[in-house]
Image 1: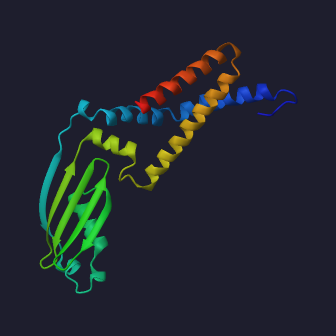
Image 2: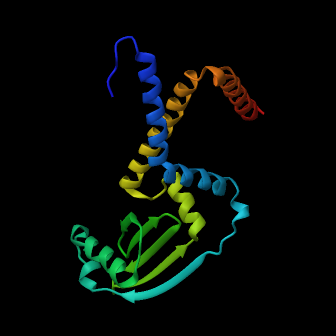
Image 3: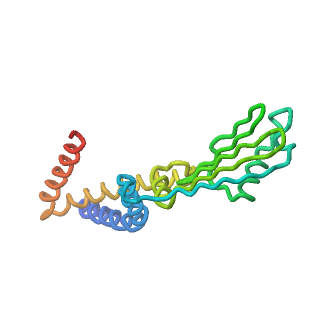
Length: 199
């Protein structure tokens, strides 16, 4: 798309329309997701869910946890054992070592798992807690325990929504018949939001 001499307004109008339409379509699913989960976050009582708690016991090789030098504790092996044999999900949120016990905490959207391992004999107790699909979606909305990749999704979503909003406003300015009414509603909407926040 090239700018013709003396025709920059027409070019800007066409460009803002193109940007608004195709960015809206490209980011439709993610905008819809954040809109719906905004509602579920604001009204948790509308979507009651039952927590699923699970308690398990087991044993791992003593040499993984009973080394005299804590630097020799097999952290990676311990984590992978829980992931592979006990289907533990989420990110490692905490890994603590003291004289008698090793504790590992995993967290993910709508999910937590905590393991407590006795260093003397390698026996452990594992507790997992799943909060349901709504809690999972709400945590995705907040970016809680979701990792860097999902953080990028949130950042890009915010950028897309900002560009969509600004390109829509820019497009309105080129619609002579609707410009005044549109700007009036823009001001009214801003005042209503400001008033609600103040109250």
